Image 1: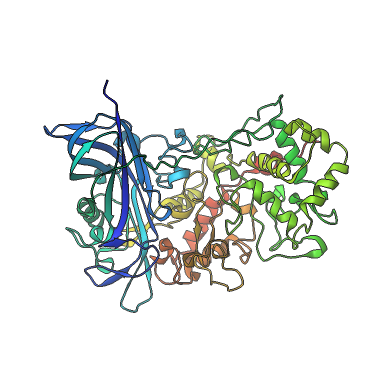
Image 2: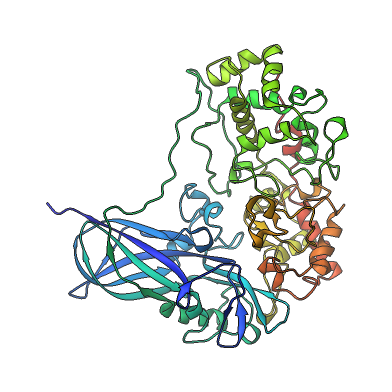
Length: 570
């Protein structure tokens, strides 16, 4: 009996002879330009090993998503026959059938789930095979951005590497990806001469150069036997406090939405959703019993606050605009700065915030216990009448996960039930079209941050607002220099209902928002590359382009959601 072997492809990202350091303008290309990397994300497929007789053994179902900045850099492949092999082959990019597949059918943890990898072309078809983004500058000039997106079937790139591998049991194959070689390879790339953006249109010389350089950017270090491969698996947690009798909640979402990663330990059940809804509208959570979660997240305003800053007990006031609460099942961190790792954690934090509810969790438990019907409600939802902060968080999380918005005019038009006006159609085309003057493309570039059916990538970005020392955004949570002035990218669904805009509510209408991205972008060292690649000030949109974009954005309003979605049950 032959025992199958396993290999782990471990990719190490380098710049020349040293490990790549991200978000640092310390590297220089052959053209004398300094450059940095803020994003390096790519898809690998078609892993094969070449036998000594020259034939190839192709691994089954080999597909992986690599993301350098989050250290996602291993690909595991099992069920391989032991023996001697002389070459390794894989592809940057995926097969045409996978590239044309429906992304909404992918499981939440699948490499091609857009909500996981962030590499789908949004409302256009296909995936981005490799995304390389960062800053560049010449001499002491102000840094500018670059955004290289290698995509489309002709740019799927074969990587073949010679090696001497005697495969027995488990092996790790270390591979180096040298980004310097990608820029200074067979076809050296100069940002100033060759361009700062590519979306891999037919005949684009910049995309052609990237594909030519990819082959020599990879090299084998030395295959190494290892007693146990390092495999990181997200544990499947057991349900917490699940009662014996439950009623599963029917979760609804848009037909084009990617599959969400709902929490295994807090399954959606009607009993818990109902309790969470009651708690969301419960004023006893606040110190003086005057405000609830719903006080600052109004359903008619897409569960946000029409005021620039919400008022807490005793008129306490914060410094950020309340974020809308819908389609949260697709997020993995919460608040403008991402400081909460889950909804159950997020739900409890405003209770103890002195500017908001200003109450202790221990006192909330006592007050709820003294109120009629809460003990039976906790019994139904958790199998026990005991009330605890943990259960309060789980119940509110359960409720918030069910708030979805997916039936706007745009969605109905996509289903053929309505028709967009000419102005709305022009706005949509601007929205999904890159702004790449080198290739004659003059779109609005909105999809880079607000792409896909969720109209957000859930990332943290510096979007060109002047950085305030009083609120440094994501930096306050991460303490990473690159996060100075970066805030969570909100969804544009229901955007016409969620004024005022930005993390601090500085813009009162969509016209002011478009003026910012057109002429008001501030160039700072942490400005997102997808904005830093544009001229000073921004996109410089025409008045007609701004009007068209606003007309399209208004088609994202879901009136049914704002009127019927989350009415609390009595």
